[in-house]
Amino acid sequence: MKSGLIQALAVVGCYSLASSASAADVLSPMTPEVQQTTTETGWTFSFAPYFWAAGLSGDIAQFGLPAADVDASFSDIFDHLDFGAMAIGEARYGPYSIFADVMYTKISGADGTPRGILADDVEVSSETFAGLLGVGYAVFEDNAMRLDVVGGMRVWSVDTDLSFSGGILDGESRSDGDTWVDGLAGLRGTYSFTPEIYLTGWGLVGAGQADLDWDVAAAIGYRFSDTVSAVAGYRALGVDYSNDGFLFDVVQQGPILGLVVKF
Image (cartoon, rainbow, N blue to C red):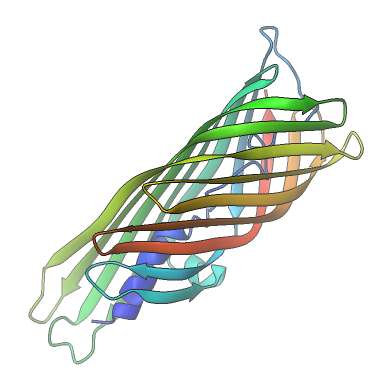
């Protein structure tokens, strides 16, 4: 059995998020724009699907295997991606905001095993969910700039399955996974150079069941109208979690693209 393949796919499943991007408002809500359309009730709402072309590096261990060093490019991850979805939503009332960032990926792969004694082939399937729910408060705001203090909780859930065909282990399957929760806090902000062009970014750091959980990004945005914007930038996210032989000490980073729709 090729442990390298199993470990690589397990990590990719956990962090491809090539969909990502834990993600953020490089596209939107995570860093709301200063100019917004306000409803009659005073609330503003934003929705932002995004794409994060991230690679990953670090150390991982699953299925009782020794920790392995992993360095996978986005193209390596994309080759095994079955499905991915990422989006952010935000509701804002005056200086107060509530936001959510949800990422889900499913990857799979298969390979033959040495000599084919234990099994002829091994199939790996991994599903990962990462969800951040947070609140924010604008400590500074004028016609060009907004700076928010934010805090929230991020939930990670990883499930990886191995299926064997042929050989002694024909028909057998194994599963490994874990779920953990971390608290994060930090800043997010937006600065408008012109009514159309703006910079946006954020920085979050925290811990909980993980020893460290962090997320930083910077991007430039362009407003096509009061309701539609596009952003492009770079994001890096890291987490260091271990529990009873289950290890994820990984950094994921890469360019991010998003579309922001306000209503």
